[in-house]
Amino acid sequence: MTNALRFPAADPAAAASFFAAELAFEADPDDVHRDLQDGNTHGYVLVETRSPEAFAQARIPGAVNLPYRDLPDELDLDPDLVYICYCESFQCNAATKGALALAQRGYRVKRLAGGITAWREAGYPIESDAHSVVGVSKVACHC
Image (cartoon, rainbow, N blue to C red; front, side):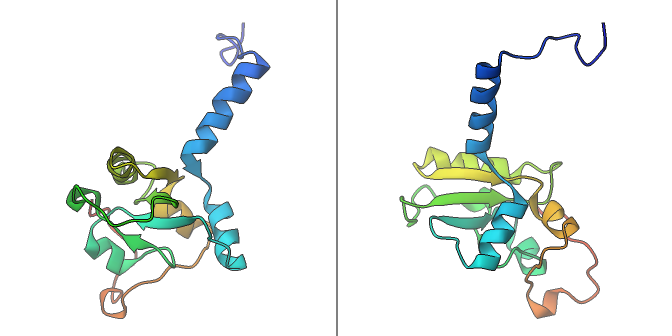
């Protein structure tokens, strides 16, 4: 018995259900980048869930900053949109915490796989506040 098959693969219908559910919770950086290039972000907003300092240093173009630690109980957001939350990386869970907080307030959410680290590693553009970029080579988590 191989290590990879020690646990049998799921029935194809169960696997399809599982992976469809997974995709309902996550967005791919490449898909978001293609949307940005096409000017087609109708239906969703990118949400940076890290601190304002991290947002100032580097953010995905068009993102809004809603730090998960500071989310008020009442938000004036469009309930018809999906809010795609991101943070630093797979090692950071600020996007998960932000998505949870938004979902608890009744908003539809997804998480951007890999956060801004995956975005940058793919070579996609970032925005920053000019004064905060001096001497900064990598954004610390600042969650």
